[in-house]
Amino acid sequence: MAIWAIVPAAGSGRRMQSTAPKQYLDLDGEPVLLHTLRRLAELDGLQGIVLVLRENDQWWSSMAAEATGLPIPLMICEGGEERFQSVSNGLAALEDRATDEDWVLVHDAARPCVRVTDMLRLVDVAGSHASGGILATPVRDTLKRGDASHGILHTVDRSDLWSAQTPQMFRHGRLREALRLACQGDRAVTDEASAMELAGHAPLLVMGSADNIKVTWPGDLLLARLVLQAQRQESESTPGRVYASTE
Ligand code: CTP
Ligand code: MG
Image: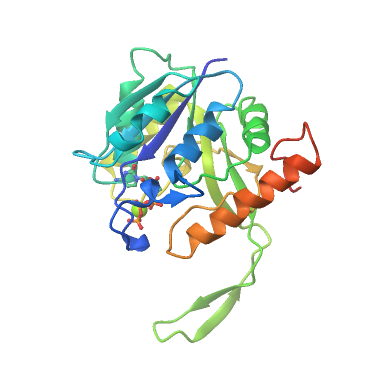
């Protein structure tokens, strides 16, 4: 089966409050985005990556040479105002190359610590399910619903709650159609799975790892650095077991 990746990297990183968008911030000597692309490029059998950049992106050029040197074809297209528009543009950029039946892995530029073993599990499990699937982890904290003044209203049952991560993997044709439908409604679509759900599909939750963090707030860069360090140590101490899952 043919698998492609789409990496939405057209966000402005408001919550990060930095001058450059978070995907271009330094993480262990390289931009966050380069780490992310390297991880995807390690996935055996990936046909190519569509990288979605913001209009007039002024940072990409400084890392373009290194990224295009990765051993995988890289296509670039322009993003939109909202994430789902960026992903839709990425899907459109694949239209000439991918069939409706091909699989697409959508992965946030801001998740540089994703484990290759987790992506392999996703491809294996979601790739045998008609509606695809997403990496996710069971919610670990006790959850509270609060009111406007931060008083606790009640405790939410977390037994069947999961935190959605990326990559999220769907058939190219189905995802394109789901995003087209989502675009017409006024429901919030914060990930591709929500668009698939709204279109009546039930993608699978595939166990991921808690260290697949999304760099979102200022302190997250330090956290990502520690994760990369720990993953390096882990693969050194168990040769051949690269970035194995924590399960
Ligand atoms: N993204 C995108 N196009 C958009 C918005 C987001 O391609 N219009 C991408 C981001 O670059 C990021 C991923 O989607 O890699 C996840 O989004 P998020 O973490 O929300 O990033 P930002 O939107 O950049 O951050 P913020 O919400 O804090 O502004
Ligand atoms: Mg955002």
